[in-house]
Image (cartoon, rainbow, N blue to C red; front, side):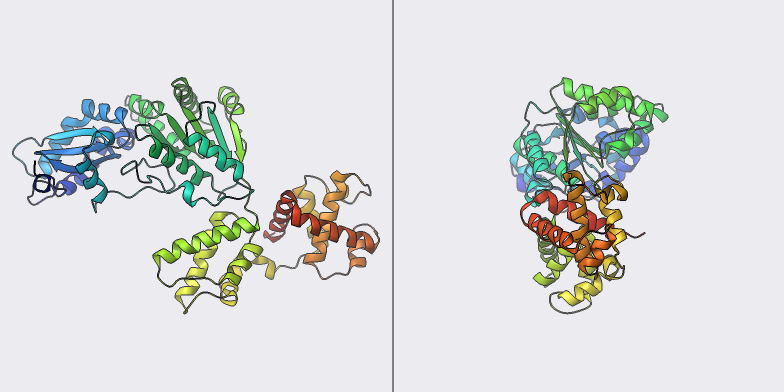
Amino acid sequence: MNHQRETDLAGFGGDVSAQTAWAMSKGELRNEFGEGYYRSYIEPLDLAAEEDGAYVFVARNGRTQREWLDEKARASIVARMAAHMQSMRPIPVRICEYRDLSPILRDCLEQSPSAPTPAGVGGEPPRAAPARAFWKGRFETFCEGPSNQKALRMARLVAERSGSLKIVLFSGQPGVGKTHLAEAIANAALARDPGLEVRVISGQRFTEDFVDAVSRKRDPAAFKAYLRSADILIIDDVPRVAGRKATEEELYDTILAVLDRGGTVVLTAASALTGFGERLSHHFSCATECAIDLPDQPLRRQILDSLVTQRAGEYDGFGVTPEALDMIAERMPVSGRELDGALSQVFAEWLNGEGAVCLERAEEALRSKLPDRERRVTVDMIKAAVAKHYSMSVAELLRKTREKAVSHPRQMAMYLSTKHTTLSLPNIARLFGGYDHTTVLYAKRKVAELLLTCAQTQRDAEQVVKLLRQPN
């Protein structure tokens, strides 16, 4: 067979190409089958090429999708494609899974300029060959540090299909990398085994698709089969499902179905899972939880280097001086997402000048994101922030005792008072209840030593500084 002649991504020819006809048909199929069926089965269907007189479609999500399309939608696809291409005969359609494609068709799919690009955050199904990254997150681009080390190791085990892991929860405030890790699991798992059924969906979309299937009085079997057939089911921001009884029950049944077939469920949330009904809460209490904290200063610097490299690959000549990056890492104890936003602001400054962005230009560009420059920090503010971080009252913080649970936070507050105010040691000692200035000096030296050797102390100090920099 002369594949160079018979394999053509543009289709048979004519006024409307096959790709254009398929794009037009998808909108019509969406109306015909409804949003739930469309998202689950029709949207993740790619027109790969024309071969041997038939159009080859690839069901990216495997056997369940292919079987549903063959049984329920093939006739509609044929009819709508023929209508748009003004064909006087039925359009031959073949629906297959990626692993069933010939090597030539795989090349056609990967090299097609019209092939959809990998999806980002939001849980869209994969849109290309399993050898490539379907979602944005990858282990290779995840910056590792003390705040996320345990979670990263756990994510790799999930991707390797460790049999002992049933439900895994990645928790942490927005922007610390939970979604990145979840997507990296999906990409790595498919790279190891292209035949796996991997599903990535957000809690919001889970709710919307289920409500759509029920409210339109359609058979929700398609929605259920799509998720319950997963070997790895990833639900990003799962708390968005809480509070809706019918949706919670569907989520409960879905999780049970995945676990019963030997699959793994991966969840992400900002904190411990609360607000769910009794049955779901019981299952979630059995989850293996990995908390991700805010990055420390060295990790923030590593993240910034990675972001600069990515941006420089897109825009020739873009650069930021090491001094500027050091300043951002030191003065912005924030999440990776917020660092990305800060770098975007620095990028805008680069567009208005020449050469790498220096320290002074970076400070000017980030003036609105560095509130500590304008906000006067007082000892009272420091005491309140330290007490809040350590879950105690200010009165308890000032209690004269050598108990470590009290003395260590108090020493932290004294240390930060020497760093963030211009008061003398005797004045700081007076504001802490009449201590001698030597007590403040001892606290300053002790905490400074701990900051060099203790990762937990580093994180504590950075969390308190972040509280200080938050607007009133």
